[in-house]
Image (cartoon, rainbow, N blue to C red):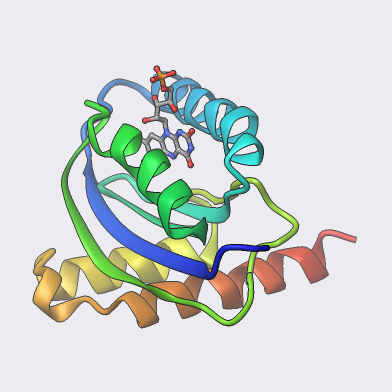
Length: 147
Ligand SMILES: Cc1cc2nc3c(=O)[nH]c(=O)nc-3n(C[C@H](O)[C@H](O)[C@H](O)COP(=O)(O)O)c2cc1C
C-alpha cells in the first residue's frame, strides 16, 4: 500500500560564498546529491535559489521526507532553515523531477528575491503556498519554453 503523500516547503539563507563559479559548483553538487538520493527515497521536488536564499519543495511520504529533510537541515551550505508547510498533498506537482531547479536567472528567482526582501526574510510573512505556487507556475513556464 502506498503511504499518504506529504509536501514540505521551507526557505533558508544561503551560506555559500565566493565567486559565481564557486557558487555554481556547490549548487551542482547539491543537485547531484538530490538526483541520486531522492529517487531512492521516492522524493520529488523543486529547488529555487537566488543569491541570498533557497526555497525548496519536497514531496513524498511523511517518513521519507523527514529522512531527507533531516540531512538537508544539517547542511552548512545554508542556515536559518524555516519550515513554511508540512502537510498532506493530493498529488505530486513535480512528479517528473527528482529535483527541479530554478536558478538565479529564472523569473521565479527574481520574484522570490522580491518576496524575501519585502518580508525582510520574516517567515511569518512568507507563506508556503505562495512559494509552492511560484515554483509550480514557473516550472511549467520553463518546461513549455524549453522545447
Ligand atoms: C538547499 C539545499 C537543498 C538540498 N536538497 C537535497 C535534496 O533534495 N536531497 C538530498 O539528498 N540532498 C539535498 N541536499 C544535500 C544534503 O544536505 C547532503 O549534503 C547530501 O544529501 C549528502 O548527504 P551525505 O553527505 O549525508 O551523504 C541539499 C542541500 C542544500 C544546502
